[in-house]
Image 1: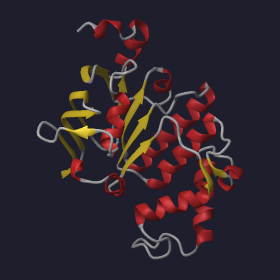
Image 2: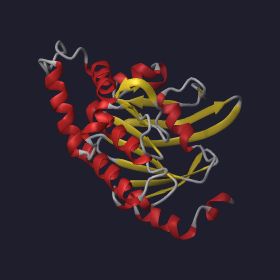
Image 3: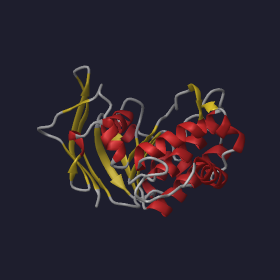
Image 4: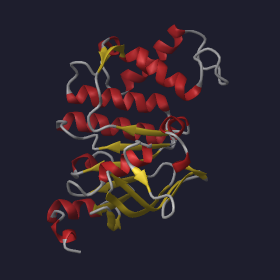
Length: 255
């Protein structure tokens, strides 16, 4: 039961971006991916999620999700298998309330609200009570559930709602693409604590993509990987993040 990335090569518009990335994420593990701008961090996230603009060299590359070839699945099939992508800049969806969006998300993952195999809810009202309880745990203001998704939200509100999506989705593996981008220290702490809660509750494996160490003060990674020019040039434990904070990426740019 793991996410295995073996010699992943990916390109966009005929430009090679990922040049042989290999790592394995076990359930409940947190792997931080750090690197300078343009190193391929977001390309890794979008490639794993199945973004059609990113093409994979299927001869050289192998990505397996619990033994199944992830590269053969469409983006929605990957999501149904439990792959969750948190975007760096969550999109506004005018006219769709947060609670209606989250209900649609839940049904896409688990089946019709009343008729799914687990019989989790017997009414829409029961789901909304569950949603409100989850929102309270993660510091999402109740009034946000009534508003259109991300419309007029602050950066912190967008990221908290996205962590709420992640909690409802119960992912097997989550990819957090610079989820700390644009957040103040209090919002980073709340988002990190929400992510930790999901890891502990659902045994979710996480790829946490970030430029900085600050979010790692609140969500300690099991492993840290330095990504430069489409390749992992060094891996280590959480102390590696502090080393990067002290030295920057310069020592790795000349390797």
